[in-house]
Length: 399
Image (cartoon, rainbow, N blue to C red):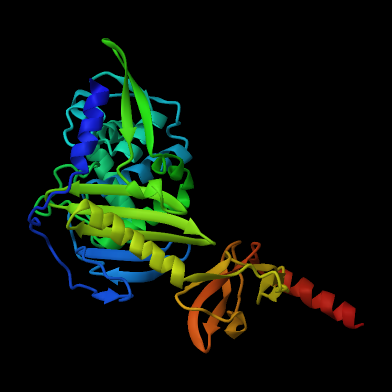
């Protein structure tokens, strides 16, 4: 019976319906760039995952109802907790009365039923289960309310300026209640999830699976079907999450990787479920067709020690912070990319990892980015005795 209800629920979720948009708070729209893509959804954005560069935008900062793409942040915090050792995939999660009472998209977890963290992630990622999302929120933070505080703190750290969460699932989301996000903010949290926790793709790209309910009534199998139809056919798809309610209309964050490009396409308030998929696919196609990434791993550069004034030692080794990368939206010629290395007037004391210079990158004379150069060691400030000994050393070397 539960398996039948799961399939029925999925079918109902994928039947197109049209509803008036709910009330919304709106910032000054950023307009449209990348006009080669025709997007009818209320808002959309396409970014490159490694660099974070915006390739396409339409009303990217407009505050809208996000529905279940809210769960992208929920999943991010779950994987953060796993990475930090607070929970493991094998940990048991006991379902509370409150978690089991969630409506909307669910896997019909029962009060006091236990499932592993791994199974809960599967339910959230594949079936967009509200009950599993709340159960995990309670597991990590003790209550959904405490978990929502964590969600909003993470949003601020990621620079999500047009987002406020009131729950962990997106159920009953409403601008008036203060639960909202924007296409660009959804792209930012999608980037955090897919780039920092790529293992999410092991769940978000599964088309069909099942879980086993274990309760006092016995064991029953429940079928899971992915709400993201792109996982069935789109080349390089890595995820990520759908969402739809009468207020939100149809939303999707779709992520894909090809030829070194990590693309994230977000569509919000599309008029029906087919449009959200076709327009997200169009954005990804546009990005893969027109973009390429330049990367510099500094293999051809030699890093000589630099001098430190009033320091012991007087020279330090340096290194670039990370690889430099830049997304080009048209064809580019590597020979037209120029690098200029500059160093600060470096004076002790210096700590390992302090910024002491930078590499400036230009393309045909236009700046395209920079990369900090860091100190590889600590340098203490030379005292009177240190300076005296250094002077004596120099004097004896001359003699």
